[in-house]
Picture 1: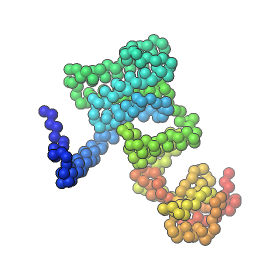
Picture 2: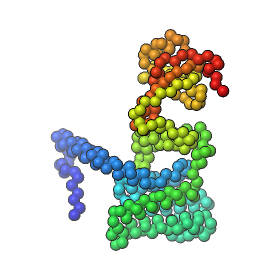
Picture 3: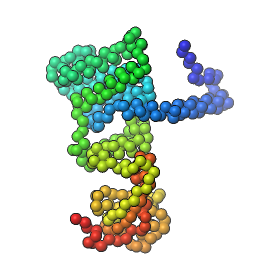
Picture 4: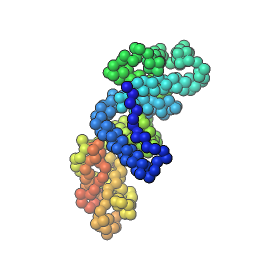
Length: 326
């Protein structure tokens, strides 16, 4: 039985009252969806954690959009759609790689395209075998034959996860993954800016919002620098003191800030200021380029990262001997 009764059939064109009633129905549908997401969030995230990470691959084609959608649908437990999307993704990746290799193979079937690439030494026998396996599973799914219809939900999940992870590994093998030990500050900035841009777009598979963008940025920063900026499990106080160089004042911001450069670890930190602290710093005559000794504190956010720093006490000017460590 297929019961299609999602919407109440108000008479068209809607009068003012029916428009309000339809808006009410939509709000209730939104509440229902939010409840479903909340009730299933643990399982959704657990499925995401089963998908392999391959790092950063800089060369992309349109197939990447389908790959992200396949990962997203898998996380929601929509396994047949994930399998179908990966099958199409594999075909487009194959065409993309063939073009990169100077071979336009769009006129061939996927079966012959894979064989051509293998026979000409452009892909390995193992990658060709995986491409063929994905092709076969995709055909079973799209033709919806008896054997595919009989698969249990657990079987579909296992099959969907395997084709997603296998295709991602082939993508990494064929195109190449960015070596994190060779990423400089400029490239790191480019990567993190891209994460922020994807969060703003909010497309399936991209960072959903600022919180997830921060998490992905944390992960990339750790890969590049070896530093995990999550200091604890979240909600705990962090205190530190150091010798800092004053880099910038922003007394007109909300909140007001002073940016300091830690002379020992070489990292900047922005410290929020109260009105009284701004007044006291102005009276001190503190200037950009001066060195200060200061103790600062932060309460970590849910990811265990320091999101907001405050002074424990007002900073004091450092002597030249103290402010220039070797």
